[in-house]
Length: 499
Image (cartoon, rainbow, N blue to C red; front, side, top):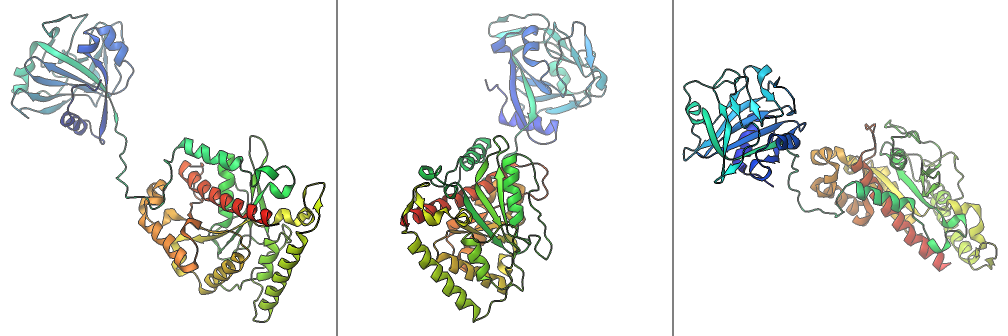
């Protein structure tokens, strides 16, 4: 049942009650439930703030509001409510005539709670509805209560309102509504530049399960460690949020804000050694099928260390080894590195044709330990608020790295962090990220500047100031991680198939 309150009535009542728009939910309707005090108390007791509306046979609509709950008292009791008031909405054809709100002036007598009566307001019966059971006759209720002008409410003695409602009265209906704050309506969104399902708890659970149950190659999953894990390499400028992304993913999986690796925003890199971060599910203690490989952050005076990148990509660099991204690059050293890279690729191609290892049913060269650490996806982590002002040397390093790794067929993505700092709309509600023109503008900028497909550019917000793991942060981060896993699986499959 929706009740008889009009939209205009609800807006007027909301204005009188104050503190924003209100939602009115019908609890009791005399026409439907009968004029019975017992039924009224069953429907309306302990329901918080309510408004009582009386529709009299003289087309007079009036009533009372209380911010406290009705109670089923065996004796007549008064209840304190400093927010209560009586009101008059309309009368016959005199729209707005004497329309008004009459506040309580003796709040200790605001309402009366009594099990044998319907709603009552005031010590002297300023507004009583009914006592005992009243039977409906000829389509109306001849109510057995009275309305008296007393001093509990501020009712003007010379008011037309007094003449309208003083004495006994008949009514077509009485309705009681619960009153609560109306849900805040989100402003209409523009068309999304990237579509995703509705962000809710079910979608978050779906993303978590997709990642926890992910298998790079299901049919080969149990043959060897090589087929169980996706290794994602994180490369980026100092302070962009590589280590924070590791902490964010670990926090989401564990359900609380964790500090798996040291992170910060200083001018020098917090990460000094190559780290392979393994994340475990708290329920099963089983490792996630993804390893996040963290490197030392790029600084403004660094040159690209091709040797460092090769050793990481091929899995020959041991974990905890000192990271050296700033090894000077010279016009002589760089071609030599390229030569050895190509030589290694030739050796690997020849080795792939060796007899199958009977134990694992995989090529001998894949049995080597370093292949478990090979990189399957590279993620460049950039601060979305500063992509336009990247130091020239760092931008050149990233472009060179992208071209070099692209030749090896390894998928590459860009994580754009700190999206909440880009525009107020996203800051207020992170789920607006795919509706924000400013975020799209930055995605387009990165795509054009680095030659990376837009589908490979993934906005995220790391956990920074939060002390609880929030739903929207989790969904956005897991969307990015899931996309990286999908890209890596495609590369994994092509690599194994070709060898």
